[in-house]
Length: 278
Image (tube, rainbow, N blue to C red; front, side, top):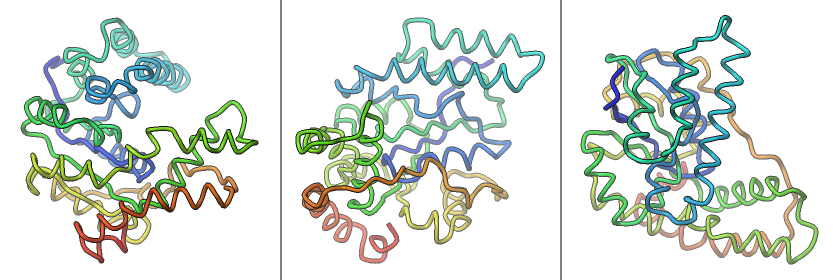
């Protein structure tokens, strides 16, 4: 067990832009090692105050699900693995030692993967730290049509409430959630990462390719991450589809206003072809 391992590949964003699909699809490879649950939140916990309020809960929930899944599927249970899960829940958590321990079960011939879309939102200071901490890792950033992404995130946030919005105050409270804008803020987030990572390290991919050409998208990821070509039996599967929800017209209009500068940025920064595929 190598307790000094760090992730070789990271998908840093964006939320509601196919990151779960990427996690599930790459996990089918024998030469990729994935953690017991998706989204480690190490960097955003360190550099985003909002995330510090709920990241420990996310870790606890993920470990609980990993334990329940293992006990249901593996007989007799692997006591070494269960002790590993216990260690990940033992304080202090979400520090550098804890983060490296996550990847300690990976074999030497496996590349370690961390998929945490909130990473794309960390500050300049955070990205500087990220680069120092992971100087050799390969990064992936999936770009989705800003309005589609906003609407998907908004619906997800609405369904996560104890009850669906039933008044204008409820709808407007959801619209005012800071994360609604920051997690798809390509206009500010992309230049921050671009400034510090070259094309050799950071790969941008349009979300639309997941549907149009998933195998072609995965070949780009393989080339970027120095992975041999492989088959992906789950590449065409939908993962975590957002539940439908009818939105009031004034909510849609506000989401369109929020998306407009992001759409303009993607068109100008990546080009019309990339935007069309996003």
